[in-house]
Structures are given as structure tokens and as C-alpha cells.
Image (cartoon, rainbow, N blue to C red; front, side, top):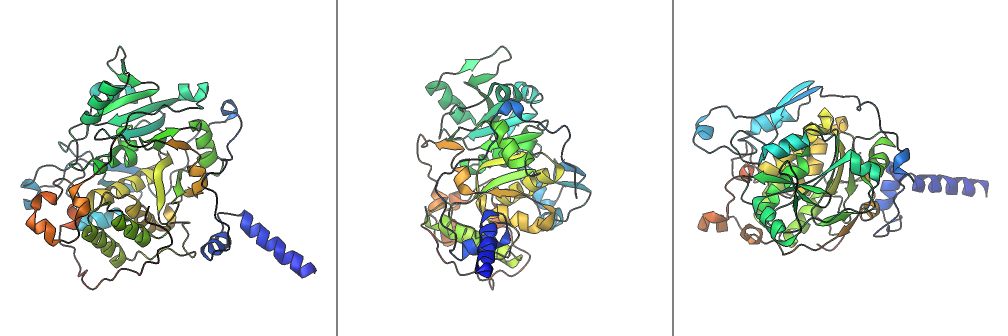
Length: 427
């Protein structure tokens, strides 16, 4: 009887520790009840009572990080126009994953590569230490006003909405926009940040610039919260920083994916949903498999290899900035589906990069989801075989995804992708 009570106590303790390996293993075996779509977020009661850390988190592994702004002259580079993400060689990519105290890496914003901000917006962003950032590209959305924002957070945070020219014009025609004395354009609490000369010809790839490289766009920021443009934030951002970063001593937080933990299952779902060309997703995954990316299992340190990337909470440490650069470089080189490359970069940085992956039900309680103003569709998403690219060269992107067309320095023909057991519907 006593022994039974003891085992029951151990089981209960394991179930309470959601970050522990025992809980994750029991979950993978089906012994953990499925969480609700939404659950309450254990935030503090009063934003005014939150104590903001007086010092930044200590820098580890990487002490000084700088960025390449111009590629070295080679026959290939000299004959091609500048790329926003740069002409990253396979050797440079491999070297960038080797952590050193002083590092210099590609991180977008190459000279004359596009993605230019207006000087008045650059000047405005210099004062921003706490940022809530979002983005709208190709006119898919209009800004949604956050609610439940305390007066303290309204004074502390800059709410910055990055838009391209098409979205800027669409918003001006369909939403009330006010212009301040410095020339800045505002929609409610959001300051519109116009990103001119689009880096890519694929809107979804352009949207990854402010999402992943927020530290490059707003370099004075100490903390940032990214939220996708189709979402309406309903939680005070200061409470979010306290809940997801400061309370647990974290510097990077992102939610677990609702359905998938394995990147290969996520890739399979992307193909079924026609999120990008199927053969190019397969090639992307074969590269990762060759480079040692294992399917997710409870033995992995990370709770999931697949995030729900619509909300990202970060302190802008050198290591986090490096992670963001390397994550963006994968998006630049391969497919624009950033969920496919997030876990790979975490795998390459091993134990040096620590993040907090919080429950998906909390993620769904942070926002109200609004439909796009129209559906996105791209010809490349319907491609089923590489031969279609040969017969129609216009299907190829002209500014991104070159890692899928540059000969890989190894034989990938003998690489077979792990068998995917579909645990959920594609959508």
C-alpha cells in the first residue's frame, strides 16, 4: 500500500514537471491527456509591479558578433547582383556554426541588396529598447490593435509594424492613418516601418526579414516580441517578458508546434498543404538528414524540433542574435518555411543555445487570429517535380533559395528521409 502511494507520488511529480524528460516521454507514449486548445497563462497580476532586470543576461560562448556586409569578390559573385542574404558558400555556412568568442557572419542586409528603411524610421527606432514587432507583406492584412496593454507598457514599448510598398499603399487606402510631425505614419498604436526595395520576389520570404532579423532592423532594442501580422495581441507585453524570460532565467522563448515535434513530419505536412515545391522541400530535408539531423525523440534535450513561430520572445544577447542570423541564413539558402530550419540550427548549436519552448495552449491564449484579406498563392507551391523547373525557368526564385540549386559538396542521392508516421492532419 505504502509502495503504491510512493509510485503514485512519483508519477504525479513527473506530470507536474512539464519541462522534464519523464513528462515528455510519457507524452510521446500517449499517457498525457491532450491539452486544450487554449489555457490560462500564468502571468503576474500587475504590470506596474514587474521588476525589470537592471542588467543584461551574461554573454556566453559568443562575446562579440559582427555582420558581413559585402561578399568577397569571386567569379560567381562579381557576375551576379548583390543578394540581401549574401552569396553564402557551403564552407562559410559550415564555419558559421562553430562558436567562437568573436564571430562575423552573414545576417542579411548586404550592401545594395535591398531591404532599406526610411531614415526617419531609423532615427525613430534608435530610442526603442523594448519592441513589439509585426509585419505585413503583399497586402495580406491590415494592422490589428493590441488590447489589454497597460499604460506602463504603452510608454515602455515601441509597437513597430514593418510593411512593404504594396501593403503600405493598401493600408493607406483602407485604414485610417495619421502622419506625425516627423513624417512617421501611424495606425493606432502601431508605427508603420516601410521596408523599401524588397529583398526577395517571394512575399513569404520577405516576411522573414523582420520576423527573424528584428535585432538587425532595430539594433538598439534590448528585448523584442514578434507577433505575426494576422494576429491581435491580447496580453500585456511586459507580462509576457516576465512570464517567458525573466521568471525562469530564459533569454529566448517560443511555443511548441500544435501538431508536430519532428521536422520530417512538418516537412511532410508542408508538402501536403502545398506550402512550397515538394521536390525542393525533399532536397532541403535530405541536406539536413545528411548533416546528422535525427527525427525528434523524447531523448532529445529540446521539447520539439518544430516551433509555432508566429510569436517569438527574445532578449537580444549575442548568442540569440547569432541564432537568429543562422536561422535566417537557412531560410535564405533553402525553403522559406522557417519551421523546417529552426530545430536544425538549435541542433547545430547543441547545448550552447538554451531556449524555453512553452505549451501550445498558452500560445493560443496570447492572441486573436484574424483571416488574411486574401489568400496567398505562388506558382512554385504547386511544383511536383524538378523537371517542371527546367521547362519553366520563371518558377525559380531570383533572389533566394540558391542553396537548393548550388551543387552540394556530397552525394545526396543515397540519402533517404526517415519514414514519417503522420500523427495529425496536414492542416
